[in-house]
Length: 448
Image 1: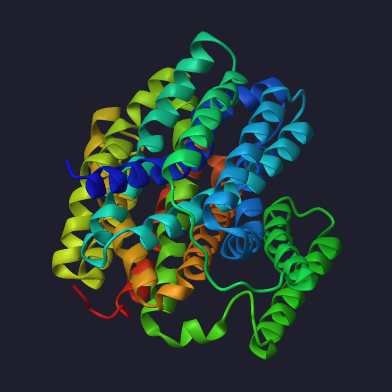
Image 2: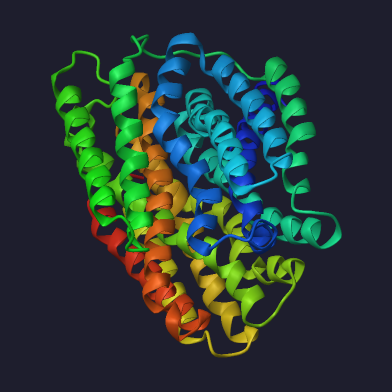
């Protein structure tokens, strides 16, 4: 092994670790969700904030973190992100009620908001162009390991210990990651731009307010207040866009969206992960609520879905390098959508009927993920990679938060007939969202 190859492997491994940790913390909560709901005596609508508080915080703060990384150094900000994430994990483990847990998840989200985009930017900047697609595929696959390890490990911990331990395991991993990254990761910077506090406040208000209004609207309570918050949030989003169009150094350069591949790739990403997150929130609850599986059994029963991510993602990355982004991304969105629609058809059958739809959906996510990543980052100049990765991850996480909220809204419309009926409606909605993403993936320029 040459020195250069050795160096690139360390970079790939340590940047993948940040993505893995951020994804793990989203996924490990899923099989523990029933235990958390029972322990705190809360509703499904309240429980969603254990996931959404984390995702919304990442999406809302992420662009600030990207700007700090471009200014102070991507490795420096990446290390701070892992440290804050680790501290937040300690607070989560010590939570005694849902309010405390949600606040602690926000702290975790502050750290994770820079871990994923900085890891992607460091990796993309360090890899030669002809290896970038394969590297991103492996990065996605290692991050996808969290989809295997997270639910299964979460189920095992809940079965053997208590749900609090799903957060304690982050502490040694985070500290080890900091020590190794200090030694092996290269420092890199992009355009140094001032941090605009007003823009940051507007984007936080817009994202959190819109999703909160949607989630609370499901109960029908305080409708005037909900509409008021929703209207203010939409207004904040509009004001943010107007400011971005006028500023000399915008947080989100709107000129990037003049490129059809950049716009289509980000919107398709929002659909891809919006579909997935709604499923990952409810599927473990369905497996535990109706067939009466334990948390551990439910985690293991997700393996046909989650396992394909690690197996397929590296091959999907090579397929993107060879055949181009558009075809691989569109086919992946199609497979995922069909998998969820088939799940909706088989909810009254035994578990064995769910295996092939779960595998099909997992293969689709594994194909579309690296294809859309390469499309978005390849549509911008190298100096804009940091911002592009930040925008990509905002669409990914905001799509995930909206997908979870939409799934909860669908559930409350149909759960009167039983949990299975609500879950079936959710699967149909998730399938439709994934298929909708094909409209945007078709706009990608075909590049190999």
